[in-house]
Amino acid sequence: MILHPSVIALICGSLLTSAIMLYASFFALRIIRRWDLSSGSELQLELEHRTYLISTIMACGMVFQALSLFLFIHTADSLSTLFKGAMCAAGTLNLNMFGYPLLLLKLAIFLLAGLWLIVNHSDNRGYDYPLIRVKYLLLLGITPLMVAESLLLGLYFGLMKPHVITSCCGSLFGTEAKGLAPALALIPEVPLLAVLATVVTALLISGAGYLRSGRGAALFSVLSLTAFLCGAAALVSALPVYIYALPSHHCPFCMLQREYGFSGYVYYAALLGGAVSGIGAGILQRFRRIGSLASLPAFQRSLVIGAMLLFALFMALAFWQVWFSELRLT
Image (cartoon, rainbow, N blue to C red; front, side):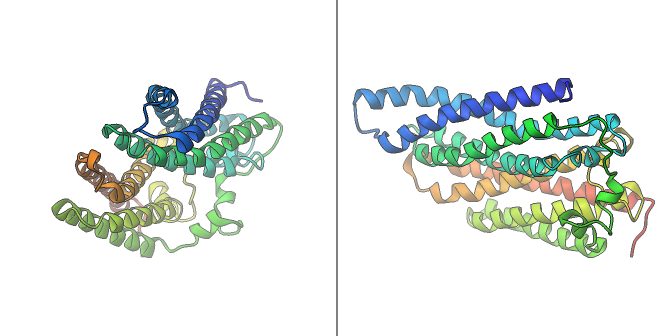
């Protein structure tokens, strides 16, 4: 194992969060089966007293798990100097079979953790905890993923071998490689950017319509997911070639480095944050008629505005990069 401070922080944080999640899951089962606000039983009083504390601890754990995605990517990038053949995080993640599955799992956990935080915040606004079963059911779905993430994290860092020669990003994301990422790299850049611009424009129009009428949250949520997928594809196919000014370089990780102004972190944060906010606004739509959640529409508006701003930022940065790039593609 590489005894790097970031590696130790990731593993310890993941183990602690998984332990908290497992404990909270046992409590969640009691909540789902026994919660009855109309009851004055001793069990109900105990559940009410403990649920606020556990929800607060869980919120801290979810925030850590979300932020740990960026720490993980930064760590993988910083470790690339220790392995022959690795030029960025792409090579480090390819050191063994657990790197890229771990990255995809952490991406999924980021999105789910963000949605859980949105549901939890909405539930805490109601005096009668109207979404308590919903958020604990979601918790039960996230817990196995976090436990699996801890296992993969240990295997990935534990099985790193300093003598292993890994592949550089040029070969991993080249046209001759096999897999999803090379397939995305084959998508023509200009048409993909046109599709992305169309989807983001539709999203902004949909968001403006929602802010005006309070309707259309489901459509906005679908467009947010679509924009996220198109943006993710663009981060492999279209944007790298303009950022690096090399038509054959499709690596989505080199842009995280100093020579490119750490611009990748801004792209990823805007894309992920926009997806969580947009999808979360749609999820909350079905709970708007609950009497104790009178403040929910205002929170939804904040989520919609946040998603619009983040996707607009992503799109603006992307087209700024294309416009001022030294590369010109037709």
